[in-house]
Length: 235
Image (cartoon, rainbow, N blue to C red; front, side, top):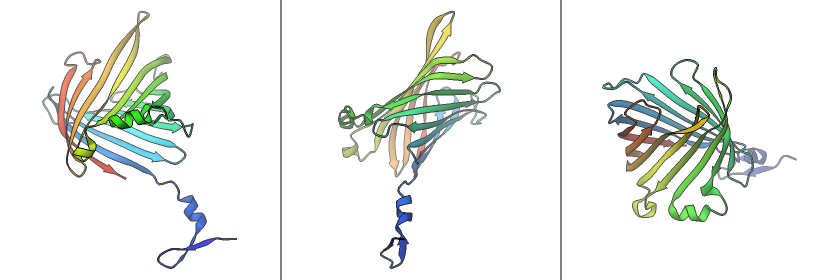
């Protein structure tokens, strides 16, 4: 039997259609433009899409130019697909495809992400601090023309809202820390890539941002500050 309901406009609607419309895709587009104190410009696009079946897509793409110019000639991108394979536990299987300017330098990684702020025993603690934090170890890595590597990186991501009730969600501090493990003459070395951003909401979803950056892979000028604007479109 086909079940029908009558909505407020007075026409019949199939209830099977209502049941199929449970999931609504959510996410955001996050545009960032910076000028770095090391005299180069950066354009960053972050994309998040929360999809059906507890699947999540997230990407980060940086476009950067040479010093003393506003041109954007190089790019670095991380394409992530995450699957929450245990419905009531905030643990995701993660895959990451790293794309960079140049040839034979793309990387594919697999690991697990644990969202501590969503964990049952820790949820209230993080909620009181207005803090979200996740940790994502990548246990296996495949790179072009290189041997398979294991436990190559641990990624930490956090966001702290500063007095969100009093300041109406106007100020935040957020960022990431990438711990990268390298082997050199049977010795394990660690290099960090990290960015920490202070954001001040000016109007709607437009923010003024200041960012402190460290990149141990650069031969010199490893430290710098970026300042600019961020605009987020939520859907």
